[in-house]
Structure formats: C-alpha cells, structure tokens
Length: 250
Ligand SMILES: [Cu+2]
Image 1 (cartoon, helix red, strand yellow):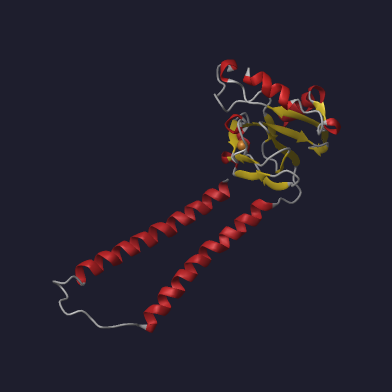
Image 2: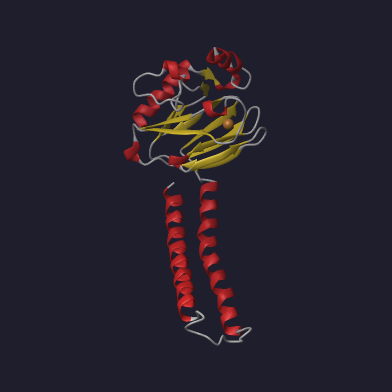
C-alpha cells in the first residue's frame, strides 16, 4: 500500500503540472489572440518544431508514468521467500481461509481451515462494526512477508483489503497470487475489507476482517486454530456454508 500511495503521489504531481500548464496556455491565448488584441489572424497552417515538441513531450511524460507503474505491478505480483502463506477462498457468501502447514519463525504452524461469516446486525457486540465484523477473523503476523493466494469455490469474487493494498479477483479453478506486509506499529489493529466482485444475493454481506498481531499473539492464534478449526485435509468438502447461510437468513 505504501508503494501504491507513492505512485499515486507521483501521478498527482504530474496531473497538477499539466493542468496548470494547459490552463496558463489557454488563458494566454484567450487574452493575447482575442479579436480585439489581434484583429488580423495569422494564416500559419503548421510548424514542424512545435509539432515535434507536442508529440515528444507527452511521450516522455507517459514513459515517466509507465516505468514506475510497471515496476509497481511486478513488485506486487510476487514475493520471493514469503514468511507465511495464506489462502482465501471466496464462497457464496463468506470467505474461507486455509492456513497450509508451514514453518513460521522456527515453529510448525497451520494445517487448518475455517469459514469467516459476517456478524449479523442483531448479534453485534460493542466495538464490532456493522456489515464489517466477522465471527472468525483472519490473523496475520506483523513485519512478515505474507503471500496471499486467492481463489473461489463457486462464482467470481474479489478479495479486497484497501488498507493493505490488496485487491485480487477470486476465480474458480484459478489461483491468483499477491503479497503484503503489515508494519509492526499496526499490531493489534483490525483491518476491514469487502468482496469486490458482484457475486450474487449476499455479495454485500461477506466482509473480510484481518487482525494484525505480533508474533507471540499470532503463534497463540495459530495454535488455537489448529485445535479448534477443521483440519485442512478435509477442508475442501466440509464447508457448512448453505446451512449457516439459511440460519443467517432466518
Ligand atoms: Cu461478492
């Protein structure tokens, strides 16, 4: 997200300079070449020097934008040696998180999966956010390169977490990849996102909640997850989504 914000700032400078330049040029032409100030118009039809300049300069500006833009695309595309890998699966209408078995900070963690449902408005506890809080949030360690894999179990969804610079299509039969890193000062912060691809009736009711945690809290969460959540081997077939959605609708 930091890099996206930096790129956005660069674009803002480019846009402001171009807008000021064009506005000044327009004002100059309006005043200097009005009928009163310039009663006998020039009959010039072309000027090679000016034409070359107004072609080359915009090309250079576009290159100035394109180079950092492509660098950013490739930077966000893949991370070398991630510290941890998580997988988000979009379903109608909830997110399922799979934490594959892996080493994190010298400990064996993962091997479990769980469903993450929105907390219905009637069940909200103090501090929980309407349409954003979920029953089982995903925890992520701070200061770790997190490889994020995204797919879908039924129709198109989109895993979007604006604060972390994440927005990735969830496509059935396809595994999309990106990564993020949460700065250490955000330990203890909850981040909220939403499905961002119209996926049907419950599209607005499948939010994403990520809790940033320091390593100790994260390892404790992972240990509890291993105990309480379902093992990953059976994860693909054991979703109780339809029953829980029916309960939610009642
Ligand atoms: Cu959706």
